[in-house]
Amino acid sequence: MGNIGMCFVNPAPQIDAGFLPAMARKCDEGGLHSFWTIDRVAYDNLEALTLLAAAAGATERVRLGTSVLLSALRHPALLAKTVATLDFLSNGRITLGIGFGSRENDFTSVEVPWEHRGSRAEESLKLMKRLWTEEEVEHHGRYFDLHSTRFGPETVQSPHPPVWMGGGAESVLKRVGRYADGYICGSNAVHNFDAVWEKISGHARAAGRNPDDIEKAGLTFIAIDDDKSKAVEACENYLIRYYGKVRMDVEKYMLVGSADACADGINRIFAGGLQTLIIGLALPDLTQLDTFVEKVMPQVEG
Image (tube, rainbow, N blue to C red; front, side):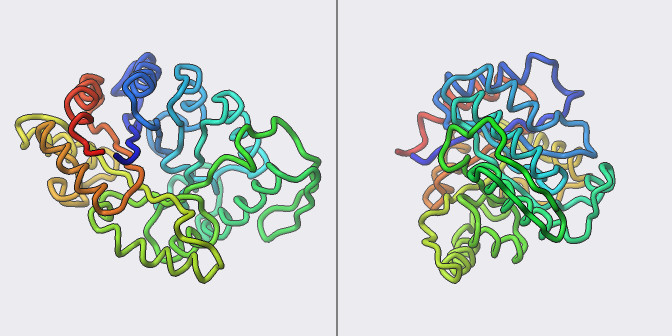
């Protein structure tokens, strides 16, 4: 079967301090491929990279990643060092998924310009790759100007942790084709992945890259309940809290209903070409994860 990861999406008021390490350990012990988290500033979630440091200490095998990190909000030198530290602490298990931002208040909250956020993030990524791999870096760009000797720690993964990208805008798909090691599509594209992938493949080939070198991934959400209406309601409540409204057809684009129904949905997604499926728990309830491991995963086709 494809790779299945779980994403921590629950805001701080809905959990206690023990929830996060317990969830990470369950993913590690339950045979899941990866453990992910979202990134926001103007929202009451936990800070993404601090969270992954805690998850690294609670796990031994599962990969750890951001889906996705707003890299433009952080200085590339500090972000490069933080990610290298996480790669060291996890013994080479970090995947850096980056996004370009869809909410202006995340940027204004830390006094980073909303305009040109995509090109800022692109320059930041290029600079981080140099900071991870070169002994001395001199950079005079549009947004950043620095001269730095190489600082540690060296990344465990070579030449550096894989960098994935998320988003659906055409400008994002072009950047995926040019630079990314993986692409994370959103819930509304998971079931129609071919159309998005055709565009990315074209951009990759135009940049002289093999599209097969880019991991195909997607993020969706789950609520497991034999009463499907309750599962749909749980996902709708998550969307309302996060976005302020229900912005998609939950029953169509998310995994809702019985364990059997959720397994069928995952099998259809993998049949559509995805290699890695990242699933966010809409309900802050670890029994949902137990049910997933015990009743859903055994039905996912190999």
